[in-house]
Image: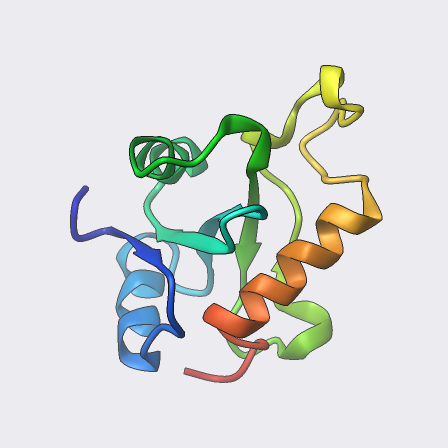
Length: 121
């Protein structure tokens, strides 16, 4: 698992993103974004695995949200705000889809800065 998920604090190299994308799904990669610390765990088979790494790295559960990133789909099609870890009725998010526009905007901003804006690999 150690080389299948990376914690990204600076823009990721395209070659590394391509490697992580190919490891499990081929056309997409899972992300967990810490909206407070502005870091992203990229890769892995489950959002929960990336979430665990960020928690071990000092993130707080309330700040972590899962998404899927699709390279080559452009800025409007590259993010899907869906993950099992997003189900948090106590935080007003009762489904896998993130409903809060502010959280979605933060994920988009952080993802675009560190991962990309849906460019081809």
